[in-house]
Length: 332
Image (spheres, rainbow, N blue to C red):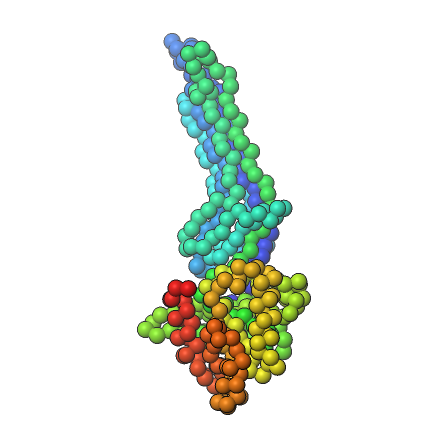
């Protein structure tokens, strides 16, 4: 996906349709001057509906579509004719889209499956016609319900990427390089901090035609949870990943300390992230000899599955894929 086209946050105004009014008509015919009430019901106002689509990766198509206005329902008519329902507005969104109330921040819904349809802003109900209110003691009701008004609200749509593996690390840890090597994704790569300004997704081919999805999340720095660097802008994408692959360069002065900082930033953002399964890839390890690699490994946590890789030299890339696949398909 092109970086300048990756939009993962939009604020839109949704106005559902007003319900049609019920009719208070009375049947009249020759020889039947008191035929009784025959007012039909009003039609429901149009809903605004979100639909999941695997063909979309971004909310770009909604960036300039700030106002969604659904059609009102038609009024009921004579002879028990119901009014036509207002046309719904169906908006396709990528999987992983979350809708929140713009004022309260309350979560309204989330879309996680292809073809899943959920009502974002319901249309007003149509009013009942006077036929509903006839009784033995009120054979000529003069009353019919008005239609319910539609809802006018501002909604925030935010995208949380659905990926099996999320790459977590400081800028220049080699995340984009790994993604470019193991998938067809072509993220922008350069020798300076914050090369990646938007998340990138790649489908990683595995053995026997299997595959998994990997997401390169823009680099985290210490204090990101408080807004430093790129702040929390992209941390939410990590929330949907099944596994977190921490990537730290072998030339780091203290790999353990760097790992601790990354864990702390995730915990500050959302403590539940620490419950996800974690793996560690020590990158650029083609620069290491066996003795130095063994020394670094001895200093790392024993309960953290670790692999030393080099994307450029293709060192242990298949071993990393095996480790990821095993983690994805085992309980724990």
